[in-house]
Image (cartoon, rainbow over all chains, first blue to last red; front, side, top):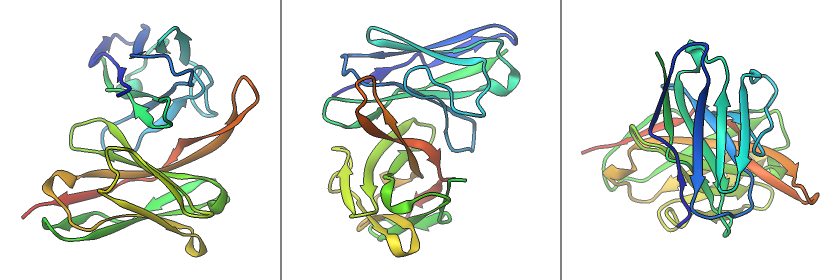
Length: 107
Length: 127
């Protein structure tokens, strides 16, 4: 089955840059999306179509894609960015797949 | 403003049935798919399936096929997911979500169902 693998955790100091990778075991030629989820809250979309940012999402959030890996970058991390982050895509059969999730800790 | 409001928390016993709901507002309920997502305690997000309220066309994740039934009542702009016989392993937070239509690089239109999320419904199954 199609899998999206993320590092379990990323730690970063305030003001530094956090990079979260999401690796696919195949290249389905589908866009990737990123979600932020804080404890006790529903996920929110922070990046769509690999690198687009929804309105209301701070500019410090950006997305990129290269080969079978997509990356979420948070530039100038703030304490409020501490959360779980999930990537998401679609496999060749049309099944929506979420990544394994990454906990971002702001030191 | 797109809003999805889900029904309240449920505590059930194994073997009992359950139906939870998700009411949409602020958009065209019949022309936007609604997806359901499970999150087990301390775990990640899992897509369960998706329903098109306009004609109740439903697609299930292979992992959830036969385990749940999705439905929608367009007259009251509400989508549902139901279980016939709950198990302890069904204990989880369940989210509904809907999204937007986009175009890809070739100009083809597609739907992404996770732009807007409900607040979640916590289902606890315990004897």
